[in-house]
Image (tube, rainbow, N blue to C red; front, side, top):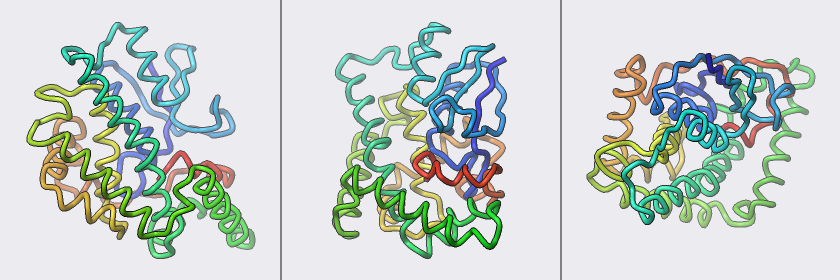
Length: 260
């Protein structure tokens, strides 16, 4: 049995991290039996989640998990796609993971209202006398990471404009197709579904969410995918009522780059 190590439900989503949702979606798309378990970042091979244990073989990182599934179980997630279509699908994945991810992280962690509604829950396990200090240290780390990545060097308005352009581009590629690249899901749909759920999460007030919500095809896509792959969440907002923050020791909050 494959075990996928996760953060656990949060923000009304199946997991706090879109990368965990992506990995679980890949397992669903492949039709593989699996179970989930709350992960411990101290034990995680790369210090982040998700990772999986496939009968003793440990695989970390959602992309490495995809490649493991493809190689081990002879699954071609992009079967039927032309080389050009495979390239577009991969480019959409990287736009979501390496650009939009950071834009959403910025507005969730550094906007005080959004922080209080969401990421602040990660710090409940920190003793009250230390909570303020730990929160400030983690926020500082987030700012440093955003600066190093580059998005933190822009104004709020410019960073939002870049993210909105990315959302518009993805909506345009999706068009009126049921899945990203056509009539059947491909590997990138695991990523698009995970990030569409995150982008459209109603508990956060951001210009990026407003932009995503302005595209009916993105909302319809999320609803279709949710009904097909997470039927237990249908009819409960974006996913489900707000669950508890991911369980874990205080050091888990230091892995902010792994959950939006």
